[in-house]
Image (tube, rainbow, N blue to C red; front, side, top):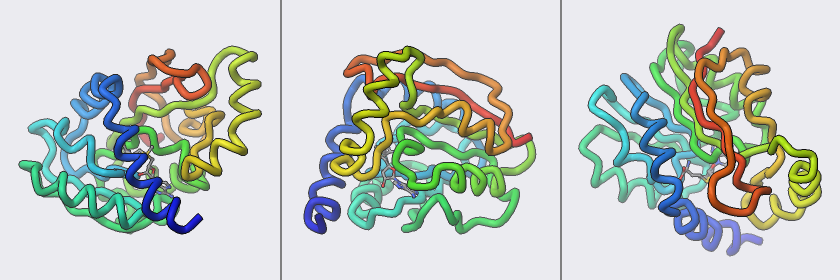
Length: 204
Ligand SMILES: C[S@@+](CC[C@H](N)C(=O)[O-])C[C@H]1O[C@@H](n2cnc3c(N)ncnc32)[C@H](O)[C@@H]1O
């Protein structure tokens, strides 16, 4: 799996995430970012063009060295200071209460211990800071959920650990966040991977 995970998957991730149907979500969610921002699982840096004028600096955390390299290229085209850190969301290398905004887009599905990662996000956010998110996850209908549970064990093996069946709102709330805005619904695509949770949350 070395060549597949290290070379093929990061390329596939970059190509899949360039899907034009994701752009309106990125635009809406990133419009709320301000101050010092940490993007969790920045991937190839596809969100960078959507950060607005209220952002002072962007820090991108990403475990895949290949994706960090792609993000470096995107950072070179950004008009904001961007620092890239190779690392994992389960151990965020920032001080407590040091960041204004945390961004996750299509990332909570892939983090092995999403609960630990969210606890870390809560730790590093300033009081009044915001977690901005767009994630796919567990659908509302039993028939869709059944397939999400069935497919996840195989799908996660070929997709770099993506879970189709994570209850995103519950995960965020259980980590000690108040979800202030939430929009849900299916985007274009197979229902098992297209139920979207978009919104923002504040540490309680
Ligand atoms: C589907 S990609 C999304 C990339 C990017 N957020 C975007 O919107 O284009 C999932 C991302 O989660 C990252 N990821 C996986 N495990 C992670 C972890 N433990 N901590 C942080 N990011 C992780 C992957 O490396 C990948 O960049």
